[in-house]
Length: 426
Image (tube, rainbow, N blue to C red):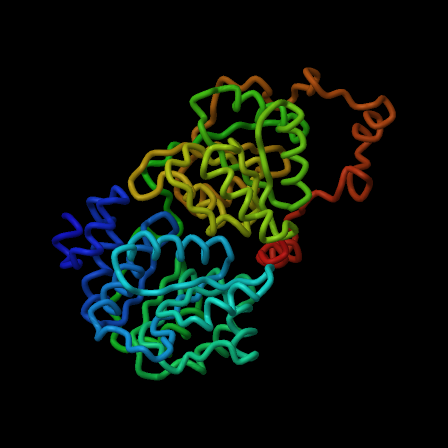
């Protein structure tokens, strides 16, 4: 199947060819035709399946086929609401790429930066607005945005918005959108609250489902290293000596952990930057840009970025720390092996993470292959480039690890499980 067979207009087909796209992914092949016909679409698909093009192309084509804009100020005709800044930026970049031959205006708004440039773009008039919920609601309340002319609405990563606590903001936004509109609703999972929201919004939707969240892409080669916690940085440095690892996205559970991994990598001579919630938006964009253009080889991220980073030809994802929510593992490794490409996902597992590993393997139904040639197998002390002071060694062996300067280790209590879903803290 080709994009031509989906009845996409020549201007968009030409742009897709310039981007190197020839064949639609399954989600695109199933979602684009009904969306082009004006139907509501309910899509259940994990990240890396090509969802952005599945809704961006219909938005561009449906708006482009309308009457040309008059000389009066443009109103927002299509609204895309998405949970994270990085994802919003990338959707806007996709609209620019696919719509480069069309006379449509689009812009993106998100928090964490000055609103001046965003309000100036809005005042010039836009056809398509991509937004995160908080900044969108804020600018609506300030009178910069009216949604009265919206004809197409996209809710992307709806379950992620629920996880991040945005669902109430989303409901306030939806109350300002016309009842008569086309809605494209995408979510990787369908918890009860998201299913209820979809039911209230969609009219006789075409249902599209591709690869449930519990499964991992077949194009991703998974590897597992059992390693002591204190040896992880040595193992990471050892692996990165392999020049075939062109780019690596490394995941940690905490912001502090991400910064520490970057510091260790820089000390070992690797180019690395961190991206997480404590970084300014400018710093996050700069780090992502450096990673995309190859200036930075290793990007270290917390789970806030698991669904927000879309890098072409990302060869490796490395779980420096396993997530304590098994679904997060699927989202993390889905950063590589995207849209049919191949990739490698490497996971480090220490003694205290073995329960996390069991949960991941139960969810995915896959026993992750263990790498036999491990230079730092469990039980080996880190002697190559790290030596604890004698006093700290005695404290460590004595088990004083609960609340001292080594930091509290994440437990498996119900309390920790609940707090683990507050992704906005990362």
